[in-house]
Length: 189
Image: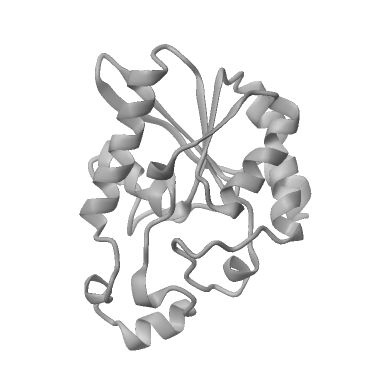
């Protein structure tokens, strides 16, 4: 799984959630930097969240991968309800109890949705090498479930276009690697 590239709201530390914000130029550069790592993974299936920041990241990467691009709504970002558009500082001021933000998708619902997405992918594409472009909170929720809370939500920050690898063997999920940003050296310099 690859987290989408940077948007202006990422740069401004604004909460995006399901608000459909496009990539900025840095995000496009990050996506281009991901191409070789994505190609070296040798994916046979390519899936993206339908939100513009993920889909554009996937489209840029797919110029090198060359697979049909499938959209899956189960991999969209968490809805942050009334906090979307706020800076993290404002969210913390107005909603100090993050669990009580009006209209927010609960963490349990996010985890269930993300795992349902992974299970559907495994059922539909058994034995395939699947590349998915998604979002930070969703990938972190999956990391949390699969690592039993050792990684993920509240523990791990995922960089834009970081790569996280999961494997499912005999119905058991495991984390292979997470937040890998080796491909971003040139962009960050």
